[in-house]
Length: 319
Ligand code: HEC
Ligand code: HEC
Image (cartoon, rainbow, N blue to C red):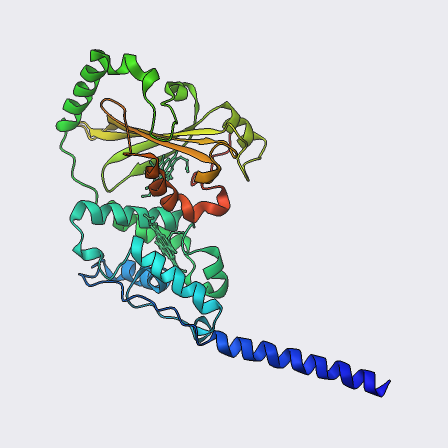
């Protein structure tokens, strides 16, 4: 009996020592956190800066403030990978170097990710609760981004653009719409005009309005609350228009800018996260992308919503 117990104890001790040695050895593998590039830091008003520093700078800046436990492998490997990926797409330490249009577009994207609680990632908030975004933070960011919107002159180029667009359609581009196909094979679907709107957004920084439509399968899924994941056949259209502000200050839709589609087919589009992506730009509904690799751009930006089947829109409750 005594020997058996002693043997067990030895095995345990041996296992513990092995785990400890592996754990210590893991600490020596230290992937580098890249320096993140040189440039002009974003210069936002102090309340905005404070929110970004609290919630975003740990990954999207050259000055992450990591906790002691972030430095311990294997957790450290994830943190380092996150920071390196995050700096590639958005770096507040160099954002001031971008031209106004690009910077404003990035800041609009920042508001969106924060507003939809896509960022910071849930896993990060679980370990760093102080980085979570509050409703008050969102209100402050929204107010700030609204100040960036371009001044739109009444009856400016927007009307001309709308007229031009109509002219192009009349010329026959529109008649040819059946033959418009994105490089990954997703066709232009004119039927979206009869689908149901499930959400609208006003993009402040570049003065566009968007409406998101869902087809019957999508609408049915919303009603039956079967949207995790969305059923095959669900199709979304996101349509963007410019804004027209008339002399009385009334805002209406201006020129039609583009329409984007996401069509769910978990088998056919398995390589692109189960969705077929497509974008068609006006006036001639030109498919976006040189080859089918263009979907990488869509997926990268939708990736923070991966736990939501890559869909941003939280549908409004349908009657
Ligand atoms: C834990 C690290 C981390 C934190 C904190 C974090 N992000 Fe991110 N963010 C990432 C990573 C990693 C990506 C790359 C996209 C992906 O693969 O999910 C990303 C992507 C993004 C993108 C998409 C950029 C693009 O065009 O593809 C935006 C915008 C963004 N983050 C904004 C924010 C904002 C705003 C905050 C703060 C409220 C924030 N992030 C906090 C890690 C982080
Ligand atoms: C810079 C980030 C970004 C990129 C790139 C992007 N999207 Fe989106 N997309 C969004 C955001 C944010 C929304 C949420 C709606 C809104 O507020 O405009 C969205 C919404 C959508 C929707 C409506 C369904 C949903 O997820 O809410 C479709 C359809 C869509 N995008 C298609 C595309 C396609 C196709 C591409 C590539 C050609 C693409 N997107 C690239 C950010 C992006």
